[in-house]
Image 1 (tube, rainbow, N blue to C red):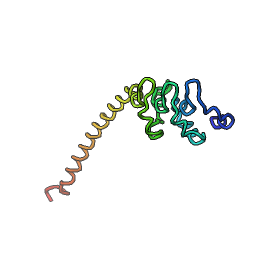
Image 2 (tube, one colour; image 1 turned 135 degrees about the vertical axis):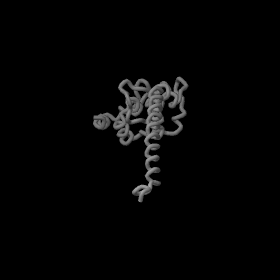
Image 3 (cartoon, rainbow, N blue to C red; image 1 turned 45 degrees about the vertical axis):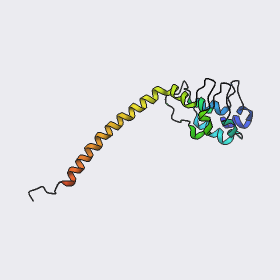
Image 4 (cartoon, rainbow, N blue to C red; image 1 turned 135 degrees about the horizontal axis):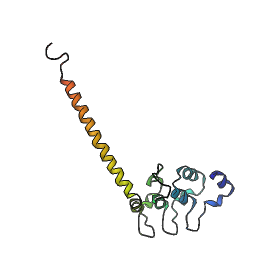
Length: 147
């Protein structure tokens, strides 16, 4: 549907009342499929990546904000998809994209760190047991001491 709309009305890729272009809106909605398609098909997508909306937000700021339907985004946008200088750009509130992400997703980051530590503890236990059994098997004489 997005392809058809862009073919019939190419001017929809322009700005809305908040100064956001279509790439900004799709990044905010976290729809990676349409985002990738637009980057390939819109003629001036490179220029649109550097646009800033009326609140000073870049495409990375908008991708860092939570979206109501964003329970756990599986298609994350990141610095590898934008120009390096946009990471340090401050919006109207004086926040960089990293600061916005940490504020919006701080709880999820803490939970992820805790889960990684728990998994690491379990794996260390398994590796210790496996190593002990392998060490014992390595130095055990086949057939025992009686032979």
